[in-house]
Image (tube, rainbow, N blue to C red):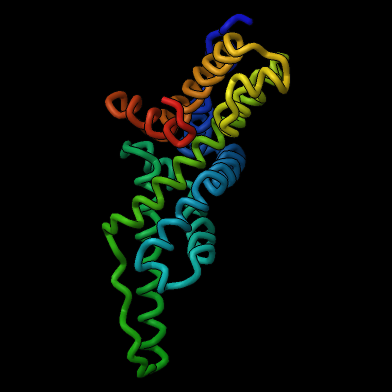
Length: 242
């Protein structure tokens, strides 16, 4: 089996997909902007719902409301602003930092609204006003872990689809057996008849394609050249690959 370069499997970049839709919003064509905004909201919900919930569960925000409720409200309100991602592109930096900052700003708004409502109702509640955190290391670690898993899952799906389209579905399946399921090459040979040398070659090819897919997603999310390689290695460690 030849080890085709990953770029042959991925002729267009996912980063282009994201930037094209942000550009549609920035240009102001109402019809195109509405469609682009909807696609971007769906994309971010898939990518960020669980990481943001993980952040809330690990922070003092968990006393504000249920994580899923706060995240849902955040997506409905903040991502209802089509310019949210346009401003991110103009400012630069990692998208995941922008999303956390957006969540924290939204949470502060929720706290202010609750305080106003108590004042208007003349409530004498002694409930303490929540101080929305700006830096909670345990919450940040929980977020980063969930985000990395979301990025890895998306990359694995893209690689699997690419190998399927190339008529090499068995290659990804072998990769999964060895890397994800932890089966030895000798066990794989006994199960499907692929000798260890060829199996190792296949695993290297799929790993290389996975690395390229991760690079696409990290570039899409604003990773810089000086952090890209370290971030890829960190994500690949989740499956014992570097």
